[in-house]
Length: 257
Image (cartoon, rainbow, N blue to C red; front, side, top):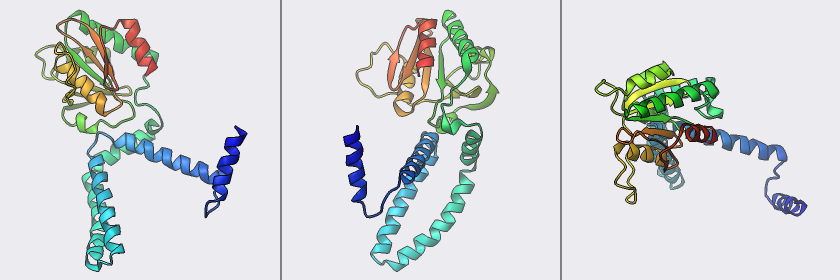
């Protein structure tokens, strides 16, 4: 270990600017904050804006270095107006992000329900399974799911197992689609999720399972699936699907992830 420390020290000594230990801590903190912010906006419209801003900055730097005075002047003035336009257009996303920061969600998982809510969630899931009522339940974690929430009906209701089971009763207005849970809130219902394009996935899996896998391929969310044909409970994580879970297995997996 001491050899590694000496090697790192030698590398730092050769840098043009001497880095102090406090500078390294500073860089790590800033990097962590930017990483958490990226996870927060991933899956929202804001990520497309950031891509556009990155392209804008690259063009601006190239134009300035090439002494394209007219383009530089236009981009400079457009940039000022663009920042104001972004604040106006993305006011809901900004408000949502600030609310998450105020609730300390920026620094941890969205899903921190405690043992009581976990038990209630599992009880509701297996109540649906016993009655052969299909369900698709998304548990948000760090990655933002705003773009998927906007495809459904906003509820922002406190989590209640009775409400969750009622939503999926067949022929009710919100039963078709996914429910999204953030923390102790049922944020939205009847949401559309992206379907996986995995060609090796078994044809025995229907739209719900494909949607569960599809969302977890793009985000860090957990997705619980209840099959109405088999009355089985599955959990999708990171693009992988665990099927035919018992109550104990689902509980262990929710705690693990």
